[in-house]
Length: 207
Image 1 (spheres, one colour):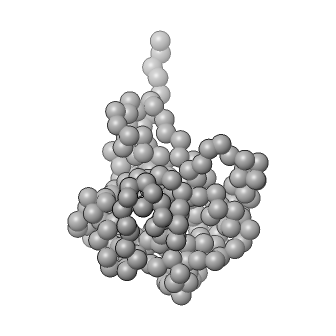
Image 2 (cartoon, rainbow, N blue to C red):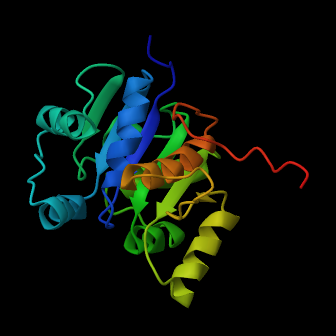
C-alpha cells in the first residue's frame, strides 16, 4: 500500500543523475508515491552523460525512470513536464511530505534563492518554502564559489536543508553505488524516510 502523502522529486541539470535514479529505486521499492519533475536541462545531461534520450511525454518518462531504476512495479510514479506550471505540485493546497531536488544545480539554487519560478521544478520548490514544508537540496558542484555559498546560505536561512553530494567511507563502500546510496540515504533521512540498507555509524568502543 502506497504512503498517503507523496514526496516530490525534482531532478535538475546537474551532473550525477545516478543520484536521482538510486533515489527512485529505493522509494518505489518501498511503495512510496512520487511526483517527479525534471528540468529542461536534465534532458541534455542524460544525453551527455549516458548518451540516452529521455522522453518528454509523461507516461513514457515514467517507464523510462522505472527502467533506469530497475523497478518495474511498486509505488506510484507520476512525471510532470517541466513547463507545466499548472500541475498539482505547483499549488500550496497540494499536500506532500516535501520536496527533494537531487541532484541540484547551482543555477537552480540561484533561482530559488532569488525567489524566481521560471518552470515547474522551481515553482514546486518555492511552494515548499512558502508553506513551511521540507525542501531538501543535494547540490552537486565543486568547488563552491562565494556566490554559490551565499545562495545556499540564503536557502538554509529560509528553511531548506542542504545535503551536499559528499559520501562517507565508514560504511566500507565497495562500489560507486554504495557511495551514491550513502548520500541518498542522508537526504531521505531529512524526511524521516529509512528505506535504504545503510550501515550507520554506531560509535567506537573503548580502545
